[in-house]
Amino acid sequence: MPKPSLAPPAPDRRRRLRAAVCLALLAIAAAANAAGPAGEPDIRTDDVDRFYALYAATDGKPSVAQLDEYLAQGSPSLKEFAQLRRVSGERIAAQMAADPAMYRDARECMKLLPQVKRRVAASLRTLGELYPQARFPPVAIVVGRGKPVGITNPAGVTVGLEALCAADFMNPDPEDRFVRVIAHEYAHIQQPAAAQDLAPDDPRASVLGMSLTEGGAEFVAELIAGGVANPGLAVRVRGRERAIGEAFLREQDDRDFSGWMFNYRKGSDEPYDQGYWVGYRIARAYYQRAGDKRAALARILEMPDTKAFLRDSGWAPGQ
Image 1 (cartoon, rainbow, N blue to C red):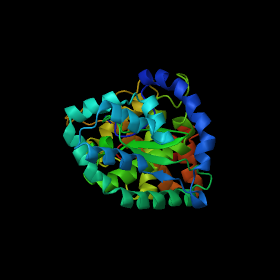
Image 2: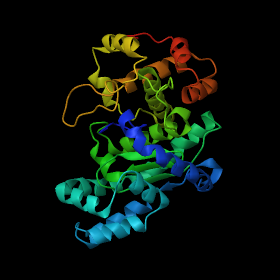
Image 3: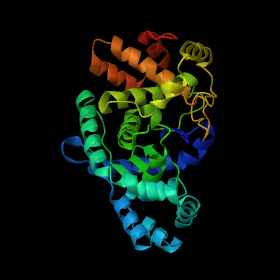
């Protein structure tokens, strides 16, 4: 969002994450042990508290050395986030100098975190009830260098407070935005296709496959948290639904999905991430049609056969 989610990276960025997959897999056992009572995840905000204590003590102008110390003393989630996304004290300081309002605004978003935590916990309890095999690694909210919005891998979900707070193009309500983005990303935790570096010949590495991965996560967010992560997508395609659906069917097997997702341009009013929207509509159509809702949710998350899922959904352009 940027691309509006923490989704699997575009193909030209996958190579950089290959080594990170091994790191994430090593963290799974530790993450599992961090789960809270009754299979709930640990939802951590202590890195935000430490950052803004430093922010207040330095009148909003911490030094590079102080920011490096903030990172060094951080949670395992913050350290992984910094390693995988090249977050350093120097880069945070540069972003704070270039856009100080981002960090002032994020301080306001910080006030929402207690309620965000309560709502996320309730949403993930719902996920566990509807999908009993769900895994619950931790959720961490941290402060970074303004981007990315965060990362998702088998070790958990890590969200950048300042980046998501600034992403008001997704949803003007910041509390809903945090809750539903985290719910969307937690759906990715359960998806085999979202937890690995897909080979070029994998059928999921296509317009159809990636759209069902992202759209399925949008549908799960709606199911467990009351709404999709990015409701603005539906507004941007209004009046063009049939044409977009027909183009989607023509291009569903394409391996270049850059025209369908991860293509938001800051300041542009053009439609973007249309694959998210189409995938969501297909997943919703399938779920509404299914008699066994639990089995339907499991299939949406596990998606063993994308072509069969599309056929069984009954979805058609303009529906």
